[in-house]
Length: 224
Length: 383
Image (cartoon, chains in turn purple, green):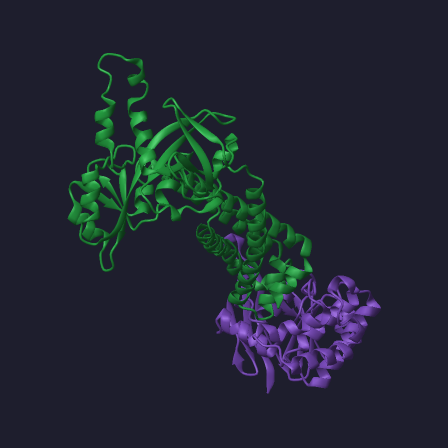
């Protein structure tokens, strides 16, 4: 059974002459434990697709299901609760909270649920160690390099042990070698945890490391 | 965690905000203290009389200057049902020319109960031809042991003590015993007409006889289970009965002045609320991206707003301490004659209003928080 089901999803902005179609009848399935790279040029609809899967945007039409559960029918509050419990998000701009240390940025995730247990602290310490950041746990984002920030952002996305990771341009601020290392790290963790990941990228070299590649052009699926 | 961490992580920024809010709080408190000082300066000697009720001559509209109670009136009041104790209070306007600077004052004759005067220096109970003055008279150079010369009535009083918060129409009160007050009152009433030897000059002996045993008003202690309304009904219509607080706010344009003073305080509170609200609104606008990301991670708008409320509470609390310290320092540097009377009760009310207004001002930010789309945390430039 597919963990992620995307059926005929369309999204448009505006109306009439000013209407812009960002996504046009996009459909695909993704099995559990697979890493999908969504490849495409700027303006192709990649991030819109990611936002819809995350429940941050409503599709104009179509259906999104994660593990059989319809995302497109949820209210914003239900979608937020679903993300807290089942989704790991990695932003292109990292969006680490600037006044929190690396460890505290990870603990932000359980804090949103209203509790930070001892087990959460242990998990944060373990994740930072797995990402080679144990000596950076007390450092704020401004004291970290770009690659370290990206690793903290990925570790944060793993804090809630999500079923699906949604990753937006994870290598856009990194050089090719560091970008490759980050994607390798991401892939290893996904496989090690048997979770599913959708990674948006404009870089074909990064897409090569994924299990599957979906190419978007002008909001439509195009041959890879 | 987030709210406190953010405060600790940006100490300079939030320190400056707390200082700015502290100045607003201080401004509000200074306004409140000056307002209270103005009211005390205008009415302290009347409003602070130790009594459950003050009895005025009927139809004088609670004007201390117009009310006259004869010895028979005072006896009627003292023997009324429900009156446990009473004493006459006389008032007369005088001028003092023996100090460094000549100044106006109000002579208050008390028919007993001098223990009510808080003693700042010397004693609180004057004998014949002695006086206890409000301490603000010291600004004019009056000292303990001085002989005050009252003009134009040519009376001398020896200063035996100083009290506080006892001014009337912004002039210091001079407390004397009732017989001394009678003499001053008669002299004030006839002025220099008697000395001039003019035809038709007042008959001093007759006036003195009429004034003997009289007072301007009566201060009354009620017996248990007697209400002020019951006494008012019993003594109407010859007399008007009110509480000292009500009497303080009556006459001499006090109602208009209090309206203006309260208006100033309300305006300062509203401006304070706007300033505080705008501070946090700007802070919220500056972290729109961060809030969008936290919402994208699953935070509700309520969670984000609670963090803001916690920050407001902490910052306004710190600002309040700063504001109180600033206000007390300002008050300490003011001359005694300055209308400045810090009242914890009024400050507590102002503080509660500041917190309420700060939370109200935070609604600007709430509107902004609700409007932040978490989807903007992901790059949507490609649209």
